[in-house]
Amino acid sequence: MRIVSGIQPTGNLHLGNYLGAIRNWVAMQEQVSAEGGECLYFLADLHAISMPHAPADLAANTREMVAALVACGIDPDRSILFNQAQVPQHSEMQWLLNGTARMGWLNRMTQWKDKAGKNREGASVALFTYPVLQAADVLLYQATHVPVGEDQKQHLELARDIAQKFNNDFCAENAPLFTLPAPFIPPEAARIMSLRDGSSKMSKSDPSDMSRINMTDGADTIMQKVKKAKTDPEPLPCEKAGLEGRAEAKNLVAIYAVMAGTSVDAVLSEFGGEGFGKFKPALGELLVEKLGPINERFLSLREDRAALDAILAKGAEKARARAVPTLEKTYQALGL
Ligand code: ADP
Ligand code: NA
Image (cartoon, rainbow, N blue to C red; front, side):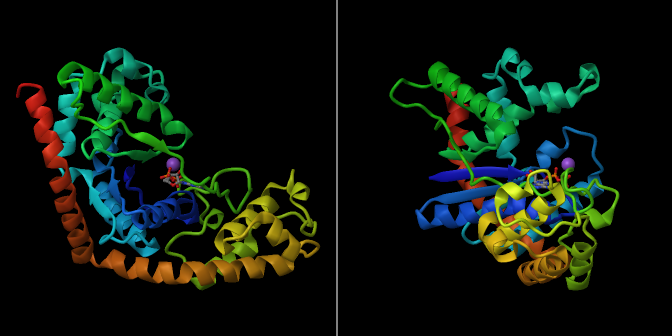
């Protein structure tokens, strides 16, 4: 089993990023390495240039993301952690696959239609060919599995179509070059809502800092933010059904459940009938307890640029070693 997965390097990481994305990577790493497989995790910095971006931010966000991933439990000795830009084989493979991908296939991608919007003429070519780079990202490593959420299913299908067509067009029938990657359905990711309204997603783009728990927040800040989180005046219900129509309460209970590694029902059997005056401090303390060590590692690693660069350099070296044989065979198959 070889899993390949990428994440866009973003800064200002928060609890939503941790619970919704990073924690799944850590869980996959544990599962896959226990089964003798391998995870390749990359920062999708080449993808980032498909949209307007600030170069200095991109470099800083890439390092920040690496610091966060390692602080949260990605082990660079067990997983291969790297950024695309340091593995030029991604770009080379994309070009080679551009010969196989069809315009019609890319035109059908809903993300392209959504992101380009009405201004297709003004969109970057990279935004259009982005799914071919995604195909290259996984085919380059002969990935057996790719974790996909709802919004990425179509892109994985495309990667499989490209692999299949390439194998058909350029390989002997009994010697296909590319492995067709299967979807790996990750455990259902938590969707964390804002602390201010419970109905919009916790996000770095929310202007109110009180709406989210940042990875950089210390104990006092966390306690304060949880205390100030918007709630209703009712006590917590004893059963899950009682959370319907109570978005804020539902969100806080859900956060408690994931952080404690338990179910919503279990949380409600402990706190049902209690008011937020009791529940909020308990939630705050749980967050501080679980996030404290991560926060400490994150803050110290974030300042250690040399260590971060060394992690990325080592990861890129391992990734290149795995990419080169497939890339060479791809050139050969094409008569290059
Ligand atoms: P933001 O909304 O803060 O800009 P991004 O869009 O950069 O976050 O998301 C980075 C990753 O974190 C994605 O995989 C996304 O699904 C996940 N993520 C972001 N916000 C949340 C959230 N509130 N709950 C769960 N997952 C989230
Ligand atoms: Na966003």
